[in-house]
Image 1 (cartoon, rainbow, N blue to C red):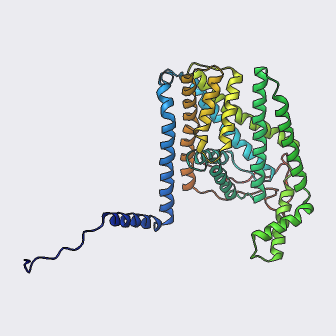
Image 2: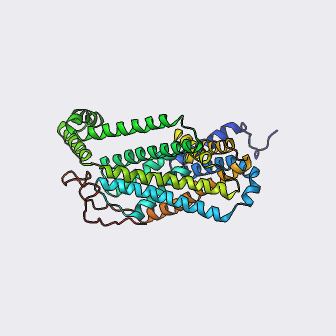
Image 3: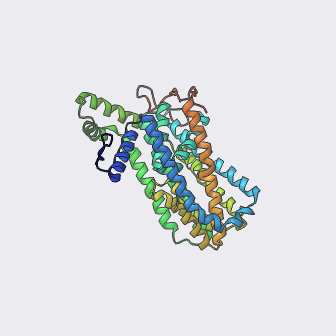
Length: 389
């Protein structure tokens, strides 16, 4: 019998339903976060995931190579750090020199900061080199570079870097006494040069490209009037035609690209000396080229995590280096790049966000089609650099 004060018990709550409701509430709360906070949460989660993956990959190497790491020679480590710094500086000079062809002068400090920050973004966030490319593109836009200028910078640096890496591979074959691959490398370099020359010859004849360019822009901007699309296409082609790199540019640029790869390679060679197991020069070159090639094959991986490490360790071991020493050298190499390089890059990136870049003045260029183009050797008034870091 129930008393007046007793309440009839209802059905017990469903734990599964409560769990689903709570999860839905959390998801809804995340979706309705402000865009900036949501972006920061995604970036933070991505960083945690990437760092965790790197720790999982590096843990076996660290355990097996602990003895070699403890006895690493500090002098060679300093040489490795200095070599990697030179490598980054050379890439910054290469991009700065390439921008100059289009008429845009950028301070060396700004170029170096952008290269370090771009490397940090590409090495620590999912998306790898594609994110780094996007970041550098935005920085060049903030300096006042036009779309044709930016496209030329990426294309020219890519061509020069590819040729320089092929030359390093050829050097490794020569040092090892194996000339069977030299013809293949020469054919690859020749094909790249022919395609680059053909592309330059094509863009310097805007009449040939005018109709396809108008059709493409009309497809991309269907809402715009036909006259506006034609004007945009003509301006784009004129800016492309105004960029005229000389033979001196390609020679100088190739030298900078060689110093860029060479400095990075010397960093790897120095850490091998630091662990007390220096390989043959040809073996080190093969390992380096194999690692870079493997990382380039999967550009979405941050810093080529996993594939670059495996290529380095396996190639060094195949060349006669003990597995423990090869693993220790790889770990030291990765601590410098992307480790130390990324730390410096993120520090510079934070500084850039606090002091945003302003457009730089341009001189003679494809950046503005109403001004005459400037050749790489031409003199011009120095631009005021307002985005030094």
